[in-house]
Length: 149
Image (tube, rainbow, N blue to C red; front, side, top):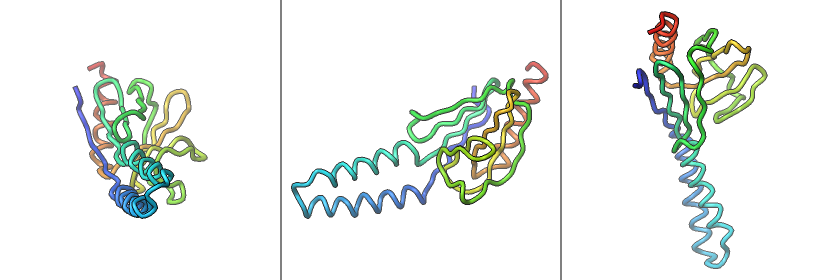
């Protein structure tokens, strides 16, 4: 049972990718014989499918994040979380899946993140455009986990 679920959509990425699809489609149509541009269009469609959204779910046992259609995903056991803090990421870390000097970043838009420190010392940063609700849901899940609920 999910206690929290949110889908963040990267409208900027979708807009840029759609513009590129239209641009390369016109090139493909005008050249008629070069399949290279068709492959480029398919690549942009794949990028939209894989990376245009970030779905964050929290249940009693874990936090799960999924990019796009869900092929790329990661989960974090609530029982393995040592602490977390609401913060902001630096603009130059970008969006997507990135390794930063302080840990892995999973983000599709904006700069608000929850930074999670695991008991093994690893740090993960998860972006959200509803950071306060996300923070509250993690807090509730951790409290319930500590009580054994």
